[in-house]
Image (cartoon, rainbow, N blue to C red; front, side, top):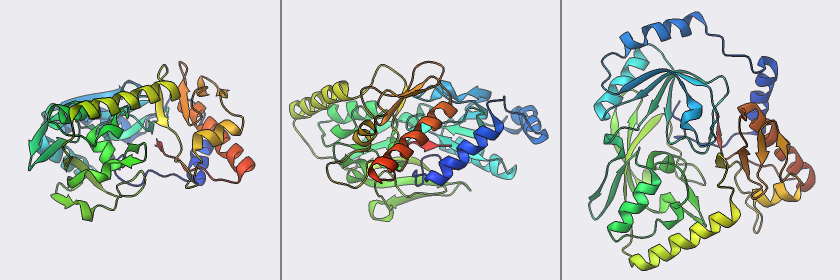
Length: 337
């Protein structure tokens, strides 16, 4: 699995199946199979040659902006590109599932965690940003905030819409992140990817099937991207960044952990998922320790101790209420594992 590297839309049927499994399994601790136990015991031997960090049963709630999620069986932070290639080769040889984990935003991790290997491009190598070919090259692990700061220092603009979107460059390209009517595909010149068999290639912008909140890149890891940005007066860029910051402060709940917008906006002029959820009377609705934000209807916040099941139940309730009142089917924007 390449997390966020494909179409992140999920249907009501898929979410319904996820809820049915939760209802059946409850919230009991994950029971390890014999294969799971063997993986834990063998992991240091299996991944001993990996130069990056290897952790066992790492709680994923530590790595998500929603602060929800059970453990990753094996969490690996490759040191560099060759290390990543080796991790993928080892996992492939053992037929282990691989999940590529980004910044942990726009993501709901199950309470039982993730089996197999979770790879996070968090090393200093994958956070590098540098000028190249008259633009900026940023590796997948570079945080959006760092990219914005660097681009501003270099005298570039056009990236202001990324302000306030928690995430990193790899995830932002994978999901074609955007706001205020703009998205990152407008800045991309080329994307470098690595397939799960270790093959690398550059994709030109025209080869990437970008669409709303998706890059369409499948079965590959985004490792870096080259961006073309216009030269804009820094004062004007700072003014727009401040304008967007004030807008977020007024309209979004920044006091509680969240995954950002839970649903895509429907393609109806003048309509938004947040407004539809609010008009359906669900603003402030709470299940367990998860709540539909009182400030933004398309945000679900963790009030402290919320579970993935709490969030899924709220999402399903919002979907049903909007369908019943407006006959509009909300599409999931957040990635539900």
